[in-house]
Amino acid sequence: MKRIAIKVGSNVLTREGSVLDHTRISALVDQIAQLRRRGIEVILISSGAVAAGKGLCLAGEHLDDVSKRQLYSAVGQVKLVYTYYELFREYGYLCGQVLTIKENFFDPEHYKNQKNCMEAMLEHGVIPIVNENDTTSVTELMFTDNDELAGLVTRMTSADMLIILSNSNGICKSADPDAEVIPKVLPYDNSWMEYIRTDKSSAGRGGMMSKCNFAASLARDGYPVIIANGKRNNVIIDVLDNPDAICTRFVTR
Image (tube, rainbow, N blue to C red; front, top):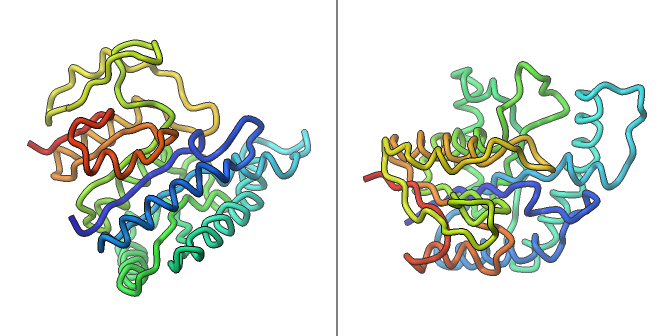
């Protein structure tokens, strides 16, 4: 395995009150540094900018939802990327910001430019940190959520795998915290759908149904996907090294 895309959700990166969880982010960076030392390239798709912005400033009541999101994103993205920059620097790695919009994946020229940018970053040992550019995205042009963005980035960079880190262990058979987790989903097997709740993340736009739909689509196209609990210690290394690790794996065959 040479290249992995990792998507981390807002609920993993923030604590109550929309405050960035530096301990959790530090643990994430530590694991990515371990992968880099193994010679594995990593593309990080990171939510958290809007949530972080909410913890730094209070939008006026006169602003509509889109304007509030733009404000929180503009403020929070600086804090988020600076946090990553400082933590990766401790391990001797550079990271770079890639803010994108949906159009960049469907306009041929924009697609080529963005792909070339990320390939150049990876070639020079820079870890791309990808997020939607909420300051310019409006409702009709937005990604469904960052799970969709992660899928598009996985395909664009031809990553060998996508790992989605959420606040869930994977597809659980009930709402009980200790519920059995479905360990494997085969292509075109939709039996997992009966276990999915339709409620969405409290900090982000997505939910488990969104994650699984995009994961299933990627797996059918030859990209394996793992959904795991980003709040579990050493979870990235565990799901890669331990075939029995608690998670849901969308396999390609």
